[in-house]
Length: 20
Image (tube, rainbow, N blue to C red):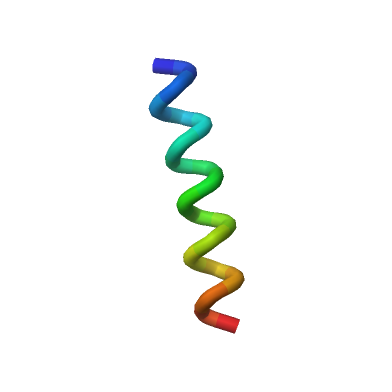
C-alpha cells in the first residue's frame, strides 16, 4: 500500500506540474 501511495503522490506532482 505504501508503494501505491508513493506512486500516486509522484503522479499527482507530475500532473500538477504539467497542468501549470
